[in-house]
Image 1 (spheres, rainbow, N blue to C red):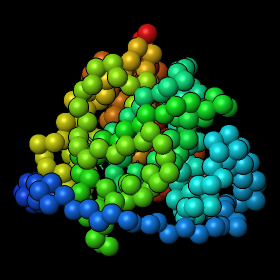
Image 2: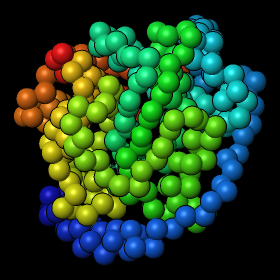
Image 3: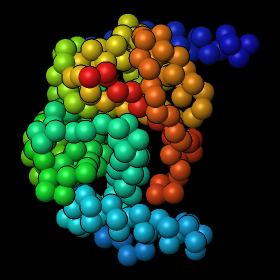
Length: 278
Ligand SMILES: C[S@@+](CC[C@H](N)C(=O)[O-])C[C@H]1O[C@@H](n2cnc3c(N)ncnc32)[C@H](O)[C@@H]1O
């Protein structure tokens, strides 16, 4: 019965999304000028026990200084700032463990950024990781559903631009990712859809669900020595993602679970990192 209900729900999503998604692409709703609310937070890790709080604050201080987050800290909301800290810590670990070397002028892409609430972390990582003097960044976000509209009638596109404020060399493209052979030093896929049910529940048409094709397109788009970082939520999704990568002949030599210290999500965050041979 549960299986029948689930497949009925998937069928209903497929029908609904086949109409709703093309309408969004047709209307392309954007209302420029969105300004995000900001608020300073005196005590950041109140939910943690004393010892953990000290450890979290130490990581925070190090990240803030190494990645020059001072301005962002004062111009963001507490939740957004902590989520960026979590993403930055995770991505830094992924790069550290990958053995990668990023050049002075780095070309990077993020596949499926949604409203890009973590773009400040990604841009800071690219600019400052193991390069105290900084590097030049060209970062593109590829979002296939940029015109999805939220309750306040602003689209994902509006929110992405608001989160990108002040970042040089960063662009948000309202279209799906396509293979661009040998272009990128780094590609990130943060929570790509692994199961069709999630893809449909997020409002995408069934025919766009091609997880194997998407990672293959990313892999083909890396330069020799380039890095692909894929993050998933929950062990089930992580394992399924591993099978998708393996089926495309992509060997992810690094795998880890990010501890929920800087931000606690309901499901653990797991990471795969693959380096393209040079
Ligand atoms: C689960 S969300 C992850 C959002 C974000 N990266 C995060 O960390 O929260 C997956 C995103 O991928 C987008 N997406 C799915 N297929 C895509 C494709 N082929 N090209 C670009 N974006 C895609 C979806 O529209 C959605 O915004």
